[in-house]
Image 1 (tube, rainbow, N blue to C red):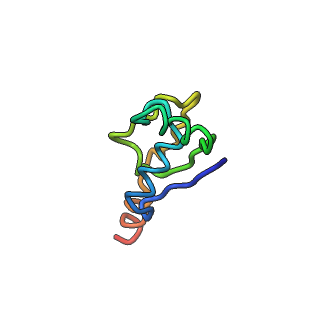
Image 2 (image 1 turned 90 degrees about the vertical axis):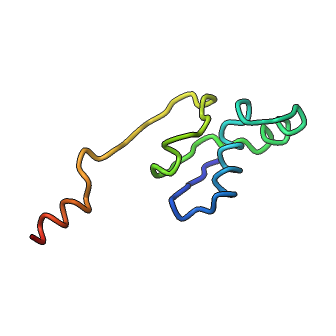
Image 3 (image 1 turned 180 degrees about the vertical axis):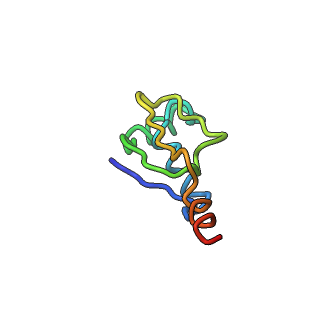
Length: 80
């Protein structure tokens, strides 16, 4: 299963998505773990909305693609 999260995603949706992406680290009971593992998310694509404070340690691979420049700043500079 593949899911996408952005800054527009509601907080509750982000919380549930993280639980399904990293169930072993985020389940609070064996019953919840079993439920989360049934619908585990294999690939999670997101913006920097999950950049801090999230427990993603179940991930096998983490790819961080970050622009070394901010597009908004480039637009602002071009307008000056």
